[in-house]
Image (tube, rainbow, N blue to C red; front, top):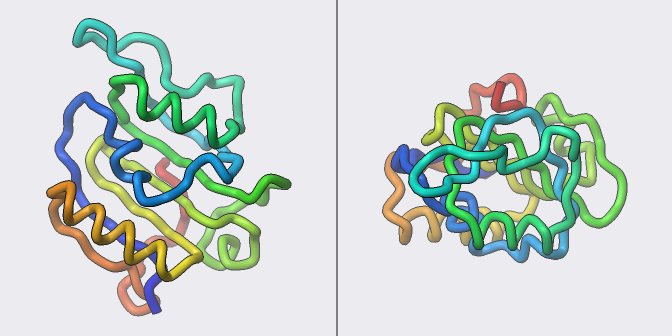
Length: 154
């Protein structure tokens, strides 16, 4: 069974999270912002944090604007999409399955993306989108090949 996808993206400034999440209506979710490191880029220089450290959640409409209307650089990211409602502490894939979380997006070292998703059709759309964007080493994460023990970018 497919749990999600993984792939590599170019290590550069841009709107990569907006591109990656393009097949998803991000506005219908409330997003939990986990530990991470990402910066808005101004005049080709790293500026303020993309996600405020004192803000642990963001509405989907705000996230969409942030990701599509700014140039930024992601070092690490940990985002979780929930239906409007409560968050659940997710540390493992089993926690993810038990929660109401719909999607977990992890970015490590700026270019290694891992996405876990509850909806199988959405996994297919994310895979096709990653292919269309020209990302490399695109793979399905399955029950058999998932070696991740924690769902965290850190």
